[in-house]
Length: 283
Image 1 (cartoon, rainbow, N blue to C red):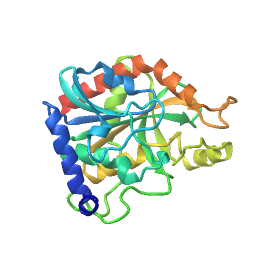
Image 2: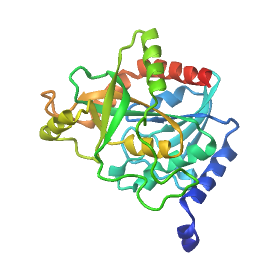
Image 3: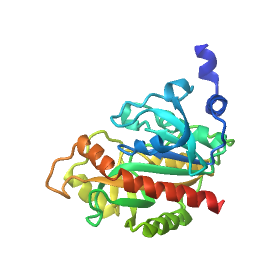
Image 4: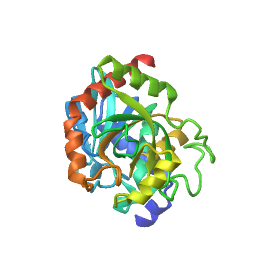
């Protein structure tokens, strides 16, 4: 059995996971959302939800990070079918990037067309205060590894996928318009992905600021790369849960990240609901 699984391709494993998920749900979501630290509560408000623990899906690994429930939730948001990862897995947990991004592979095979990636991030740009929302315009991959490294399966996408517009400019505008409608300020910014799990030093933040980063975190980038490899449209939204090292005077701790995510939940939920509706109407 071990030898058979070892010889099974990533594509075949993703197909198997897809069949398992399809057997548990009655809708066909075209929008998927990955919920970051402190933001998982969004999926608690789904209508007619079906929750599938990651351990029930072959190929999905267990989330060990605080604030990540570790389950797939499928339901509707204002009658729009949506699939959500209530918690993600991270490279710093010891998983390979293939394991980290495996759920995105299954989403593509499920027929998902739009992926909304959310995260908790540290603010580098001083205009992004604690609790602010930032729509990601681009990213810096400083994780030291790329999820597409290794043999390429053309069934997923091309060997050298274009990354000149990872985050859909149209969806960025859509978020800003929906935020304006509810009097919420959302800025565009560049997200920098690092491997973690230690927070950055002030010297590292100084470097990232010189490179043009507005926010920094330990996720999102691998998922965005894999999604674009498969032709999935990507939207990224960061919740600035703390100011990065050297920007403020206070030490950084994960409890602060979680508390800020909880504080902005109502605003984040309202905006995300509106964005999902607008994406659905656009199709």
